[in-house]
Length: 198
Image 1 (cartoon, rainbow, N blue to C red):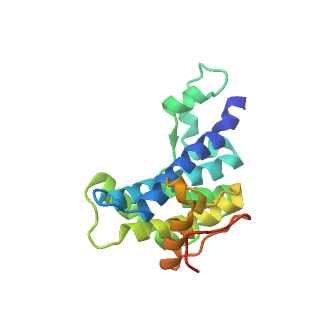
Image 2: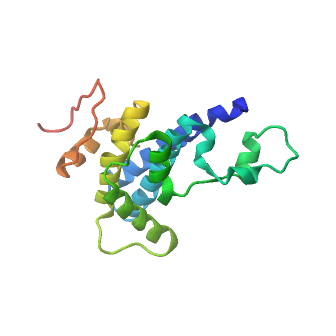
């Protein structure tokens, strides 16, 4: 295997962390003029979820995230490289990633009902219009903290509460929001909050 392909999980992971940071921020913080943030939280949460799941799968083997691998061979190249994957490769769709995750790692998605609700909301927002009947920020937080957080702590040692855009207050406000919504979250070893009344 081309050595360059071994970097695929790390490349995915960097972008996944950035998407999680935006998802957390848009789901937790709200200011006047930012009424679109709950919609963005769903899009960013789905993006983070897709990338983290692909990163987990790619740690098993970088090519497992791609479907129809045989179509990449035109018999004119000696070795499959990153450039060819970027131009011709097609990865598995978000909808199918839970099955691909299970088939490649034996891991099941925690809270598959939430996964499906977020997938449907994401599709509505991305391709048509926002759904009216949901608290989208709560849906995003439920997805992040019942699905992503346990998976990424277990696989990468990454804690979802540490990913947000307001670094001036640490993760205190994120934790307060999660406590209000009665959502469990993973605790880093150096966990400490200073702004929350206990």
